[in-house]
Structures are given as C-alpha cells and as structure tokens.
Length: 406
Image (cartoon, rainbow, N blue to C red):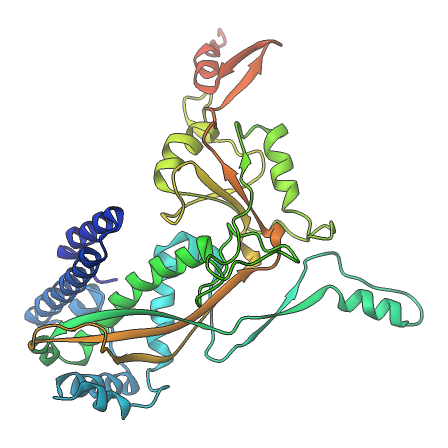
C-alpha cells in the first residue's frame, strides 16, 4: 500500500468532528482528509519518478497498469478535466472500471484488516441471492427417498436475498495532479477505496442496521420473526455479561453459537473470533487471557481456540464472539468512478464519487453473541482449594527447578 503521512493528522480531525457531532466540521474534515491523501500519493509518485527506476514505483505501492486499466483512467482524467464533468462521465459505460482494480484493493484489505481477512469477502458484480447451509450434519437415508426425507434434506438450505447496496465516498483532486497520469490516479483511487472500504465494511459487518442500504451487523438480532424498526433497523442482541474467561464460563458461550436456531449442531470450528476495540482488548481481554508461565514467558489462555480481532466499530466494554465463516460479505463494483454533484470546491479542484456495491449478513442469529465485558476480571484460578491466585502471582510462587547434583 501507498504510505500516508499528512493524511494521518487529517484523519484525527475527522474523529474529533464525529465526537463533537458537528456535521459541517465533519464535511470539512473529510474534505481535508481526501486532499491530504491526494497530496501524499502525489508526493510518493513524484519521488518514485525522480529516482528514474521502474522498481521504485512498485516499492512505493504503485502498480504497473494493464492496457484496459490505462485506457479507463485516461477516460476518467479527460472527464475530470472537462468543463462539464457530469456530461463527460455519462459517456463512460457503467461497467467500464476493470475488475482488477477492485480485486487489488480487496487483497490489500484482507492483508491489512484482520476482520475482513477473517470474513473473506466475496467479489461479485450481479449476485442477488445467497444460498445458505445451516452447517448441521449431512442428512442421508437408506432405502426409498420419500417426500418427508426430501423435505428434511432441503430444509438444511435457505435462500436469502442479498441485493447489493451502495457504499459511496467522495474523493477530491486538484486539476494539476491529473497531469501526473493514469498510474498516479490509480494509486490515489485505490488508496481512497482502501480507506473508505475498510471503515465502511467493518462498520457494516459489526453494526450495520439492515436498513437504508446497510448490511446486517453481527451485533444485530436476526432471529426468525424478529421485529424490524423502519427507522433504526434490526434491534441489538441482548448483551451477555461476562466476568471471566475460565473454562466453566467460556465453554457455554462457545456452545451457544455451536448450534443453529433450531438447536442442531453445526459442523467445524467456525473460525471463532472475539471482536473488541483496541482499548477493551488491552484493558479487559488481554489481562483476562494472558498468564505468566513457570518458564517466565507469557501465554494466552483461551479455553477454546479463539482469535482476538480489534475493530473500532465497537464501543468500550463491548465484545462480539462470532463464527466469522458464517458471515457473508459480498462486494461488487459496477460503476466505479462517477461524477459528484454533492460536494462543491474551488475551480482548481475536482470532486468525484467512488461507488461500490456491498451487502452482508450472518447465516442466522446464533452465528454471534454480544458480550458485556464491563466487569471482566484479570485471569485468576484456584490454588490449593479455597485460595484464588492471579496468573502472575502463581507463576512467581512456582519454585525454580534445582539442578541435579552430579
């Protein structure tokens, strides 16, 4: 990926504006962020060109474009330079953006974003239905196939509509930067998509409401017959209070997502993951699973193999325990780059939209549970019957081995 410098400070302004709830400040901060990204990408591109070494471009995150990609970006540059960008963009076919651009961004996201890597998004352009298997044991029968047996076999599958929803962001670039050409524009577009997709998709996977073209997040209650509010979407699951991750407590949590809504056991381990934000992981989860062994080394002690994943889509003290192979995220990209009428800038700048289609949902309501980690205590276990000792204290009290006498 292309290294960002100025954009890091600009991103902090977005976070502050969101915390303050100031919509105008948010718009200004986001515009400043996109300008900073453009400046960072341009600086990296010009530095690579100055070295007069084709390998330098690749080292700085720029790709060698295919003929199809070069032709596409050239059309976009001409449209952005024109006096009537909207009319110029209307002449570019909706499906003109090469799929290789989207695929490259998806690869980068899966390398850099653990949550997206665990979910394994599927790239598709026109998928409208998702066939789900409820992960129960394979049904079979000796003898004649009766209507009852056929009904039992087919009941293991269900079809869920996943008509793709639009995930959009705008980007801004000065007209002078367009003279840097298709390779620069590709680097800028992929960087913008990486930032927008990363945050947008993580929010959708974790907290999407299921309405207003959003995916259904893992924290949402999607049991059959659930009431969906037309304003707020699917309700949140009821959070389960957790005070420790010892086997007697953790086992039932895992067991609750090891069966489907009908109580039938699912197959496989399910890519078990625990989602929290960074602060909750460091202050609550890590102390609850990390122990100092007698050898003086730290070791994590989940009773069942679990991968912690950090995401800022969750608030402090919240956690989600999920089988992430049961969340389907589908990404398409019919339009790609389009003109933008929503954002107005000075004459020297051009704003354009990055339009992506994506949607997702879990297999059923037992794919994930919402946890309340407010009172999660540091790891401790009983020693000599009634005494409870922390992991660090137990390790310190373990006598060192005495070398055998010769």
